Every structure is written in C-alpha cells, then in structure tokens.
Amino acid sequence: MVKIKPKKTQLDWLDWEFGVFFHFGIRSFFKGHKDWDNKEMPASEFNPAELDCEQWIRIIKEAGAKYAILVAKHHDGFANWPSKYTRYSVASTPWKNGKGDVVREFIDACRKYGIRTGLYYSPAQWGGEINLEDEKKYNDYVINQVSEMLTNYGKIDYLWFDGCGSDRFNFDKDRIVAAIRGLQPEILIFSMWDPDTRWVGNEDGYAGMPNFNTVVDPDYSMPAGKEEQLWHAKFLPAECDFKMRSTWFDCEDNEDTIKSVEELVGIYEMSVGRGANFLINIGPDRRGLLPEADSARLLEFGAEIRRRYGEPVRGFSSIMPEQGAKDSFSITCPEPQLVNRVILEENLAEGESVTSFKIYAQLPTYKNKRVCVYMGCTIGHKAICVFPTIRTGKLTVEVVSHNGEYEINDMKAYFVK
Image (cartoon, rainbow, N blue to C red; front, side, top):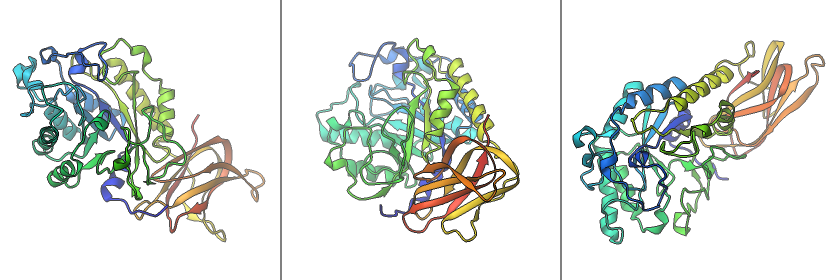
C-alpha cells in the first residue's frame, strides 16, 4: 500500500476518538414508523416542549465525548432548522410557534461546552414536497439546504452524509462538493463524494483487524457503483457508528435493549482500540431530552473507560529503542508489575506504515527470557492490545513489517481488574 500523507484535520479528527450521534426529528414523534415506509408524519406533531440541547451536551461531555452529530434532515425530509427551501421544517410546527431552530440550539450548546460540532444530512429523501424526478431542481435543493447549514451557524467541524437511498438518484456530486468546500474549506466530510473519513462497513460499532487508514476500495453507506470507487489510495480513517438501543430514534418501547457497560467497553476496544473513532447514537425523546436510562448508561460507560485507561501502570519508563535490536522498542519498570494491556500509538503525520507487530513481556524471574503476549497488525492512531495478566518489568514491541519509515509515538502498560 502506498503511503499517503493525511490532512491535519484528519489527524485532529482521530484525536476526537469518542462522539455521540443524536437522531432527533419528526420521527421521534411517530412510534412504529420505519425508514422509507412512506407513512405520513405531519409537522404539526413536532413539539418537544422541554427541548434542552445543553442537557444533551452536558451529559456527553461528562461521559468523555469530544464531538457530537445532530441529524439535521433524515430520509423523511423534515428539516430541524427553518429552511427556506421546504415547508416541511420546524417553521411549520407548533414548537415555539414556528420560531424554533434545533440546529441553532444544538450548535450553541456544543460551543458552550467545547464539543466539536457535526451535522448529519441525508441527501436522499421520500418525504416533503420536493420533486425527485427533476434532477436539476433536486440538486439545487440539496445544495441550497447544505449551504444554509454551512452559512448560518458559523464554523461546522463535520458534515455527515448518509448514503442510504442515494443510489436511486443522480447527484451532481462535483457541484455539491464545490459548494461545501467553497463555504467551509476545513470541514470534514463523512463517506461520500469527497470524503475525509469513511464508514467502517457495519452499524454495530466494530472495526476489523487489520484496520488500514489508507484504502483503495472502502465500504460506503450506500451500494457503491463504479462511479463511487476511489480508484486510487486515499487516507480515510474509519468511524464506527452504532446505536445505544435497537433503534436510532427514541420512539419505541425498547429501553430493555440498552447496551450494557461491558458491551459498550468491548465496542470501544474494537473501535478506538483499533485506530478508528467510536460514535454512539442516543435518540432524544419527544420531550427534547436525553432519556434518563440512556444518559445513566453513557455516564457509567465513560466512568469505566476512565477507570481502565485513565492511568497507566506506574513505574514504567518512556518508550525507548531496544539496544542492539532493529525495529524493537521497550518500556521498563524497576519492580515487575501486573500488566494485561498495552496501548500503542503510531505517528501518522507522514502516513501509515506499520503492518504487523508483536509484544513481548520479560519473565519476572528468568529475566533473560521473554514470551510473546500479543500479535497485531496495524497500529494507526491507537492500538489497545489485550492479553492475559502477566507480571513483568519489561515490555517490548517488535515491528515485524512496515511500509517505509515509521515512528512509534507512545507505548503504555495498563492493568485492568
């Protein structure tokens, strides 16, 4: 694989690591409705009388999230802001007498709490009054709505395109991308047309191994035809999106499907721990608040991640090249300690290099001997390497194969009970 140098904004995005998705809109008020079911959902039913985006963001901040994404328009066509290009929006609802703007309140809350802002937009839709048969008018509609979002709210960090259903329509992607990049040159785009990040390929939250950042033929959130293939290698870090419950929107009686802390930690270790980003969805309820049970579970999860990975095992040195051994690096501790995890980080500024590695632990008594405790593939932004507990005073990472020059930024030991 050719080494591709990433944009600084992509490296910054990887540092975000943990994000929260908010599916909220007209669908939040219609129990039993599904994507593309063509059932009417009148705007008159949208009335989140207690909407409090600050509550959403305050909770996710406490849990440790660094970014948030709001569904601005889903496949139903309902706009969570007073768009001039559709009557199917918050402006046609009883909420705040049609003067409300969910997007504005969400972005203001993110900025207040120092959370990176993202907006989701489904280019395809079935609801609303737009004529899907007129290609030029529909492309104008998409560009006009996206331009509203990128013009009226200041800097937006992330534009999240959902490709579901978009294979049915001939989008003028060059014109759409030109409009986006012209309005906000530093914005990150998810998955489609001119992507900076990619879909991991499932909505369960898991990244496979190896997980390369440089890809040629990534998964898309839509059936990818020939026109959607990259045809050349591109640096595209993966994002692992998934649901706290069994549904994206909080409109069903399914509190019993909320994931356990143990399952959430597993998803974290197989997303962030494999060099990808972790994006969990919570659907605010029809009051406009995060449900209590979901909020409590998110906070429990955040506390567990801090317990596990907040502090490494004390006493181990900083990473140093292993004397007399090429492609080997070690951390040492004067007194052997219990260890069952190592976190590695690769410097990706010049591109991704490491393709396989091993971790060895020095034996506690026979100190001239070591055992291999872990074999891995890519390191990337972060690799959480989990293995059976061992007492050791020295851990060594040996880079077995790599694509050109590389640098291991960090290596830390952890013990999780």
